[in-house]
Amino acid sequence: MSKIRQSAKGQPCMVRIAGICNHNPETTVLAHYRLPETCGTGIKPPDYLGAWCCSSCHDVVDGRVDVGLSQEERDLALAEGVMRTLVQLHEIGLMRMEK
Image 1 (spheres, rainbow, N blue to C red):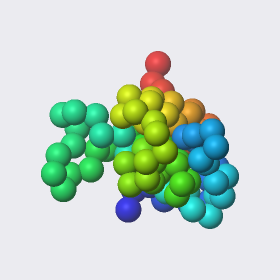
Image 2: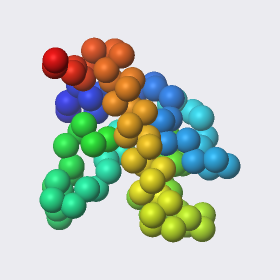
Image 3: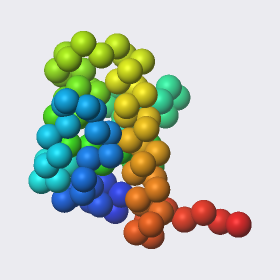
């Protein structure tokens, strides 16, 4: 398991779907954004395309629970979560920007 995937444990949800997020860091895992050409059947996208995501938000963005959001709305929520997670990963030293 990668350090990025391990980092999700105990972290706040970065996807934060209003009215859905359970705000319980005990349920947080790394939810992967399925960007075309980065994944396939049985192949997860790279962990840097992941968001710290609570179980409730994860169920929605993965389509296991229908709350009336379109695919585009679910994709946007997860993409924003990925960006928030990247900021956090940079702050804790798991992502670096080279000059």
